[in-house]
Image (cartoon, rainbow, N blue to C red; front, side):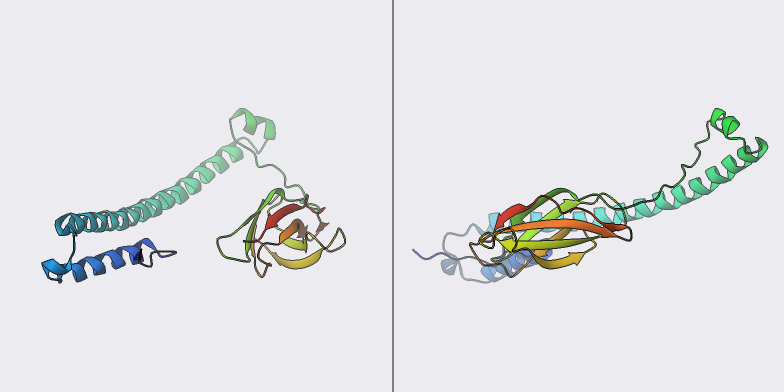
Length: 207
């Protein structure tokens, strides 16, 4: 039995709606005997409902952006006024830390050196939907650092680790894996103070 599919896969909502509307327009132009058992009124109403929802989402996004811009502008003004007011209070108290704390002012904490990073947290790996690829994710333990990833095939043994790539993000897409092969991967953080220990290896099998 033959089946028919439209190319909706990996397309945006706008592209999927465009495909639906184009198909409805094409079906509408057909003769009644060429439409088979298509319920044209129901089909048209369904796609029109999607268009209404789609246009409303665009409008809501525009409204949300305006609200965010207004909020950010008000927040900047509030920060400036509060900072100026707290500065005046601090001056009146002769910048005495005890008196400032007693007045309810929050004093800035002294910055501590970052130091050598700890190993990344919550390291995990999973095959992606694309053959021969895997997605790696982790959490950083310091703000400014880059990450280095190594991998080895399950058959390479403990000494088979090879550098794959490095970046500043908390995820990485590994490509070029052999389909069906099990791999081990690990990650470490690097900054100006040194390198973290390697994370515990995790396994992933390429699709």
